[in-house]
Amino acid sequence: QQRCCSGLAAWWAALPPTWQGDQPPAANLALAQRWQGAEQALQAWLDSQLATPLAAAGIAASPGTAIRETAMADLCEPALARQLSRLLPADLPLVLANSSPVRDWESFAVGDGPPRPVLAFRGASGIDGTLSLACGVAQACGRAVLISGDLALLHDANGWLWRSQLTGQLTILVLDNGGGGIFEQLPIRPDPAAVMDFERLFAMPQPVDPLALAAVHGVPGRLCGSWEELERDLNWALQQPLALLRLVTDRRQDALLRQRLRQSQH
Image (cartoon, rainbow, N blue to C red; front, side):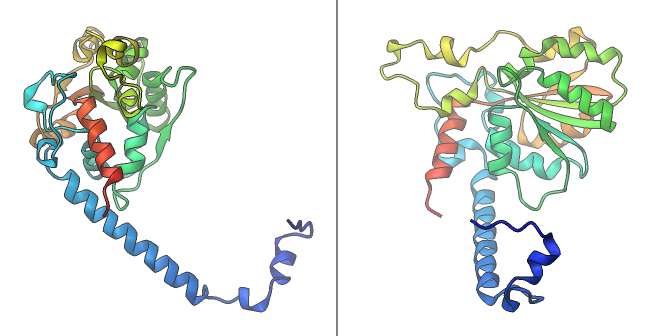
């Protein structure tokens, strides 16, 4: 390990002349081209895998977690991350709740979508203050979108009190998978199931309807019922000062889909 304390200009001047050319070496250009080709192939493959409903992707419904709205059985979180990365307007700040939303966005959002600021943070319990943070971003930036899981949104239920003072525009998309979907991605679900109450101890599904909770605070909302309705409902929500879209997904299905995507050879 070497240290140079004479400044960047002196460090650059001391490099071999072959390192100081206007163009990168041919080997570096070839390597970059291979990486770009691999990235393009991966993005095309993800489009083919996530462009169809979940049932068509070869993942059957899981008996342990019933889908609560059968009309929404085709909505899945990896595909939602990909579609929303195309649908959300450019330059609109995006806040991603900790847990699955931020991981899915990093893994499955398109690489050539509209540019936008993306913000995420980790509270004391991972999901503390998610809604309040998004309200603060909307207040500071004028507009924002929050993508959150149902538990993260419920964990900051007092954040809805922002409605009376919020001057920025905020759209909230809640991915309601009936509990902590991130735990479905960890190898902790027991077999046989009777060994441990996974649903109660880890998933922790709650009976609260996020649309009803928002309505109590005067916030309008909609249940987005299909892929066909997603763009229409999103456009409606983006026109409201503060609005909630509820998208119901199946966490066990989505965990299996993520696993298949990451293990597939392509």
